[in-house]
Length: 540
Ligand code: FAD
Image (cartoon, rainbow, N blue to C red; front, side, top):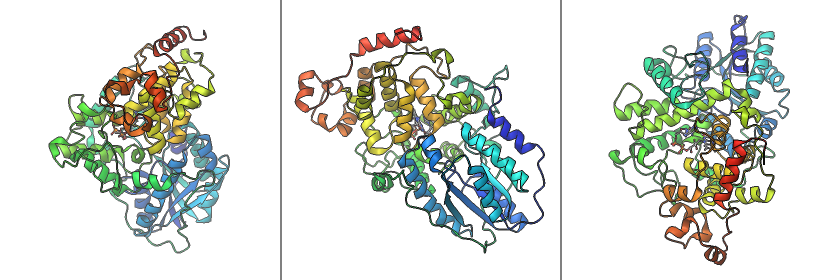
């Protein structure tokens, strides 16, 4: 970790920066999986400003990279969502005279030279992109920068994904933060010391045009078709996903607006959700205002459900925060635990935090625990238990409901994620990396940093200062997260007719009668085993 590749990339961009060549035909913006939007997209806005200044057309290109998707366990749902959003973007960009060129390159090793060949083929002067903080992506971009410079193309890779970029916040000792609370305090005061900068919409802090402008038309090209699928990543329930998670920034903005201003998600997006409350368009009662009290309730539709849109950059985190300022009629960001909106902003802070951790400690994304002392914890190798977990047949209703929610929607409520993840790692004592991988392969909002952070939190191998003996009792968690059992009944049809406390832990006789599995393991015994193994990593 001594020299994380982010530092190397930034160094590379600074060193020997050449002036762009006098002549060229286009400025190019390389759109990637995490920045699928036009508004408030820093690299795109800078590219647009540069094209207008140089009186040349702007082109946007996107390279589908199946080998990367395999390596990163990208889910077919996420790939399908990417393609659906690219289709929407293609039409919106066309209105600005900007062609979107989508191509496929299967070998990840040769991607940098493929990108450079493409840029040469259109005689690009400059290439812009937003930085991706995963270690493989950083290494790829270092190569792209090197090759671009060698070939007289000026590369600009900029920070965009987070509110506060990695590397900017550090402890008094100058080290990266490894605990959320102090990170969050500095994160907030940094933002509030210069909101014009950190929350600025558009090209770059304080300056430059705030939006992407119409550019001269590029005669030579080509707006290519967006394919409807990528081989090997066909989405089995694409039609349903398109209804539950509609593509495009307009839809993301509408979800944000309804979260902040209304109690109900409504059915206008075609989302028929059993957990949605009756429409109650009352500002005081919005889900954001009630977030503090309700956010841990898996049985209610209490959170924004913006994670697929934030993970794919369909809406920017800055826009989300700016919207909270408008809602509260304030100029400074509120991120305290006293109010619903303040707590929600803290969640956006967690998103920043886990990406900072990933950038500073790339090992976490390479299968290593953040806390190395837990590298030798003895995990159970039990394919049957793992299979029962991932198909939602553990016999613990809240865990099964959570997993089946993910299997149905490609998304899971945060508390449910924590319960399901902790059950796998502490009760079944199965390696967190298997669960991490399964979530990535299943979820539409799979985000390497947040998923890794969430799994390592649950397995007590991560940044959480709480020691390993935090072991959720899934039955007590169930009573809190789903008091009446609505959540369980929604996703576990075998238990649809069970009411009252039994829903959380059905007696064996009842479970047998309903065809519902008995628990795989006794919670108390499992807990003792986990405590033993964490106390002495390496021992059985
Ligand atoms: P809201 O409660 O409305 O929060 C708003 C936004 O804040 C979210 O959309 C998300 O971008 C961010 N956020 C909220 N909680 C967290 C958190 N704990 N960590 C990081 N960011 C957060 N989130 C992902 O976006 N992708 C993942 O792959 C992912 N995997 C997870 C795996 C585990 C085991 C756990 C415990 C959590 C994981 N999370 C992940 C975090 C969190 O569960 C989801 O972001 C949240 O449930 C999404 O629902 P929402 O948009 O309604 O969230």
